[in-house]
Image (cartoon, rainbow, N blue to C red; front, top):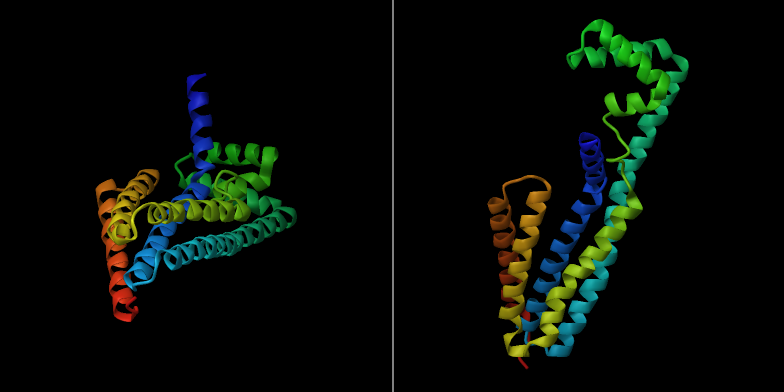
Length: 234
């Protein structure tokens, strides 16, 4: 009973990997791009209204861009998966014995003895031939299947949520303190997201946090420099 529930829980978690990755990346991009835009415009001696308009435009445009980009990317992956499945379905229909032998060979390479590999391949083929080949030959599964709409929505909403943080800070603090406050809050949030992304992918957390904080700070400082170079005095 316990092991069954554990397996079910692990599969359930895997089903969220695609959209969770898109959500973390979307929020990270929303924070960084909007914060950079805000501090850049503020450094160009624009007024509070112009700064907030630019930040809001960045939030809307960035959300739509992230959604479109993620949808196109994941749709391409889904198209490849469907093409592979269609080809496998065709091969199963025209050469079932050859496909059974191929599946048997896969299980033998994984360590099963020839007789057991043949029996496992036969039983799985009788139960769900296409599913067995999709999983064990092509490396596809329902849990990891490409979901373009889900990924696009996750990216759009997460970008908007991330972008709303520096935009809210810019709207609440005095204009003269906008740049430093937006940068400070954004760096903290980037560190949190970097750590979350690393934990999700089981990567070293400290390295991921340091990388995203360093790159994010550099991006915001660069936009400040550009804003001051090309901005106009009030």
